[in-house]
Length: 375
Image (cartoon, rainbow, N blue to C red; front, side, top):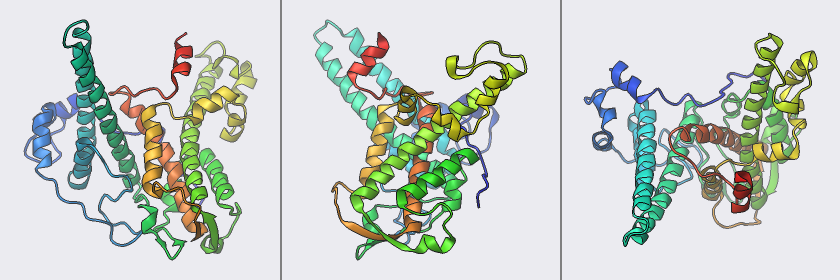
């Protein structure tokens, strides 16, 4: 079905902590609103409810457990996994608390380092700050991963497990397909481009019939990994470009109604009716008007944490070995993987934006590029 169910411009993650404390008396549990004003108490109370998450039901058919290819390395990530499994309605409050605590701990370490500058303890506090920075980077990436995982769970799509679990006698199959659910998160304009991307990278005709999806094909494992990585970046790019497009359309509406004077986004448009018409064009045509710098900026993860998450997810899914092994699979399984990857990029963009509201992420780029921007 080609219809779009929703247009999720951003993650509807979280009401404010103050609103929760004053206005929400529900949520179950005996702690009430005060639980959220005391993070340490909240952790003790939540973590007493931790249970062991079991593996998926069988092979590539995950059950209700929190089955994901990437293993969480931090206590914050494992804690959020247990909250999601046992107290789902409290997940975003817990995630917000963890982000706030990480930000405060990092700032405190940096402040102590600055205060000790020039003293005998300067070296010690500099080392402590560096260790805290590395610890926080691991923890915040785990939190981001769990926020992404939550978005998949909202549309009832289990992440594909490690592909080694899905390959038998050289044949790869992933269940369930979940195409409709994975397509439902995108706007109609974006979905049209995504379907073309899927068909292009897996070699399936755009207008292929349902039975063609179950035909078998062959693909090298290394090539499949490259396709997966590229599809994550494609989803990230489309989300960035789509929101930029929507913003320009909104600004052109204001300009046309007389509420906004002057050019919209500089030289992106002309004037008057031509300006509005240009902003209202389809996403496909809008993207073709990007210059090289805009394309690079939209397609590249803005932060190091986002870039690292892409690498970690790919490594967890495909393994460390870059094998040229040829895999026999169905077009349906390939489509499932590509749609999942596009969704991962879309959710990653949302998550990155949400996290930066509390915790400052590190800009993705080499030292020379950052220096040029500062100049």
